[in-house]
Image 1 (cartoon, each protein chain N blue to C red):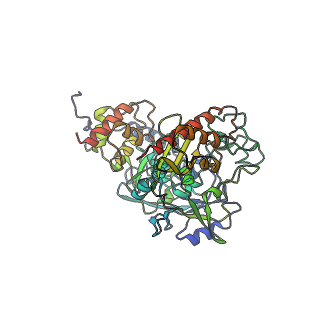
Image 2 (cartoon, rainbow over the protein chains, first blue to last red; image 1 turned 90 degrees about the vertical axis):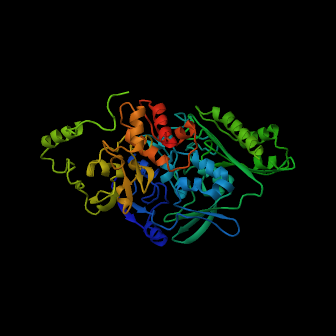
Image 3 (spheres, rainbow over the protein chains, first blue to last red; image 1 turned 60 degrees about the vertical axis):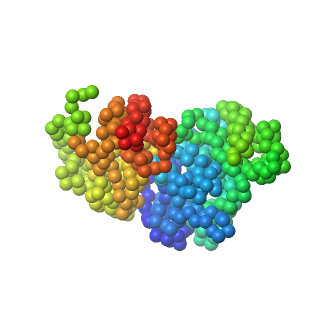
Length: 334
Length: 206
């Protein structure tokens, strides 16, 4: 591991000031915030992340979960995944989020990993994690070992000829379906970013993964009150039943009344370079009867632009079935 | 059944680690920074730290305060093993994938390999050594002995620390629920069935 200076920030302003000298934004930056450390320290041991300074933000007052009078849920940046999953308001009103969190990692890691850290979680692509391999995300311009390499677990949506790395998070998929807003503070003030605009496609700059700017800190995430009468569900398909990343996963938030779908919001994980949502597929379901024919049509639309790689062609049909099954199961929830 | 109580082993004598450490210490007496044994007073072993990078670690381990100036790269796992010589906590993968390094921080289980020791100022760490001792085993330790919840034993301290923490976490009643919440602890010998049996016995208070 490369040597670094470890400093502790006692308030948000101090943290932002300390990080404002960074050359690039959080991921891969020379100045990094330390929260749970489950991604950062892992990647530092692999020499993939090589920060010169680390700002410990675990003492900032960002570890609360609150509900505002208008029903908006406010989740602090350093709320641990386990605490968020088991919060009774989350389990009751946003079961899809609770389920997604509990399907990720291990109990130990969920005790450590944080909300903001999970948003910035980095890909599990083996070429990214091995400093000796070609990877445009880790080392721009070095090429992509994954294209025509070991790409069984990688993305089929949102890829470019520079990068096919998949976003590994479960939480992000649920937050996507729930229309989360990311609240950011930085040297230039505060801004709110809808999660749909937070993650960038790899394009020609796969090293840039989010809209975060140097010195910026995620302070909290908000979720609108769930649609009245909605039911929600997360389903994760993977190589083993626990402690494994998704090959395909689906987060569904749906309302059904009088035998018709009133609202349908859904996102998928394991298949995209970012947590994936498709407005066209959602629109197809509104006003329809919640049957498998409608769900299959929506799944076909969702995966319409899928571009399989040499080893992950199976993901196209897997993802469709995953989505159909989750939509069907969500519709049948009481 | 055996004819002796497995929780009450025979007289304490030199163990394999003590012998190896003694030989090792004698063999490399000229290497001044080698973290030799200091079990007697439990004073953290000092190591050389590059100027400008050294940080203070002040934490409580098994109820006792520890303070040391360390390299910021020192994980809690390495601090426990190399500085404080509490070697019950094991290094497996060193990347948070195997669970051998599981300890409790403020009563919650974490992977000590993915935690910087210097970031734990003011926190309370519990290791396997703080759970019980020969002759006075924690009920979970005794249950693992009773059910043979191990073969080689390398993952066992992590398994037990995880299992003890699980007792306070939301967990359904079935074996499958236990397996799900224990999935962060890998046992390459495959003692899972006995591990689950040990945990279920303690949970059910039988």
